[in-house]
Image 1 (cartoon, rainbow, N blue to C red):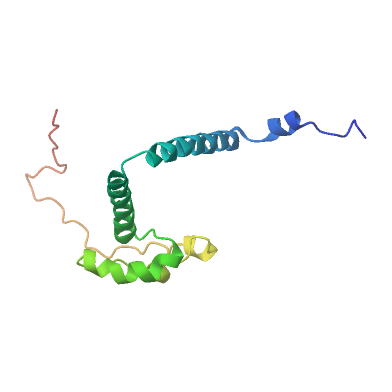
Image 2 (image 1 turned 90 degrees about the horizontal axis):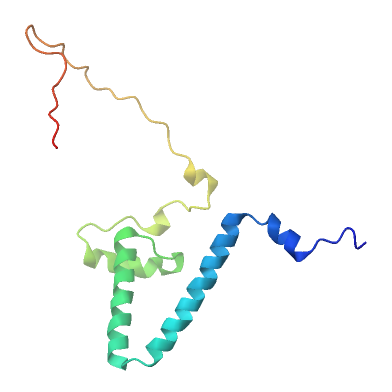
Length: 134
């Protein structure tokens, strides 16, 4: 039975390098986050509230204009969005879900029904001359 046992190092070698890199970045981000939280604990409270409020405001405005909010916040963002933009973006609930396989399918492009360009008259060049800007 010991012959069939696979060591942890051999299992680690089978993990794709991309996954190991992502895992390393997550660990590094957690270390930086813990460091920042410890530094923020020693900050002046008013500065902490101003910086935190600014970050939350930027995140909320991004959600409003890009419509990338979490699904559970969609009703709240639907009510807030018209106050910040002239035209309210399409609701997240009205868009297809990314996990839905049929959402990735796009309709085929329709052929354009434009008139073909008129042939050049006598004496006119057939190609356009483009000047290069350096």
